[in-house]
Image 1 (cartoon, rainbow, N blue to C red):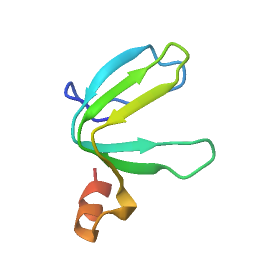
Image 2 (cartoon, one colour):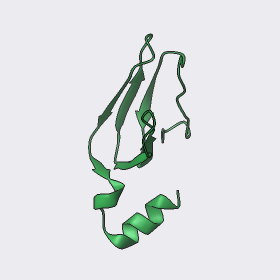
Image 3 (cartoon, rainbow, N blue to C red):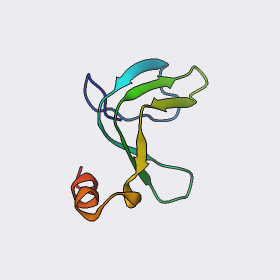
Image 4 (cartoon, helix red, strand yellow):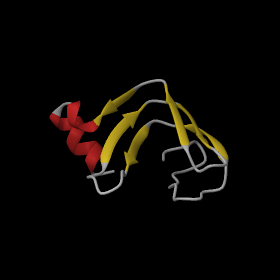
Length: 77
């Protein structure tokens, strides 16, 4: 998760937190599915007490919908 205080990951039973997103790539792992990557411009993330996560992004685009040059750069991140 790209944030203004640095990148971080979220695991099950993560401590509740609130952070400001910075531009970058968010990777979403769903049970037994391939990882999905999104570019976010800015926004906020809330990790709730029940370990649910809410991401509010100003803009978000699936990496696979971006142009080839952008896609190559972002998948290297």
